Image (spheres, rainbow, N blue to C red):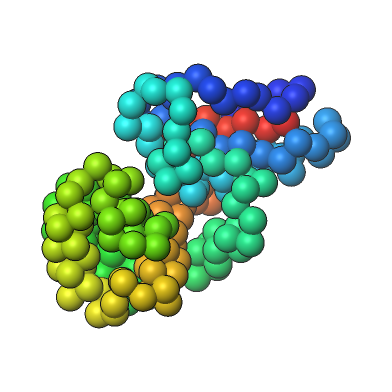
Length: 187
């Protein structure tokens, strides 16, 4: 964890495998709140796939709690209730384990865009390849991903899955230790 006097400029690369959670800019007497925000932000993050300096929002390598917005409540919900029992989260876990290595990246791109073509551009794949992956995922998930409500449901399911997997780093008894592979920035 780093405590900084001012907001950092995160234009430098993050080493492969690390992720960054950035807390709110608060006065020094409230640094604990900023740290808690950074802990929550890093739960939304993904490990850096490369050292390049400009990450897209979908990469989720650097997550600023100020940009998480109302999704922040999902982290609290995951803490209060185990989400492993939710059918959508179970289906996403199956896809992560049994699907192709980049299945979750493709699904996140589908959830984040308005079309299969846009999703394909984000993940640098041909749109027909993404369409086939979407079709296979729909069979496992049990709902359509080409409709706005299906994409919204997918986005929430993916977020809950990620929060739950990252929550392991923050279970009682280890909450004050730095999560492995993560950097917390409190300001």
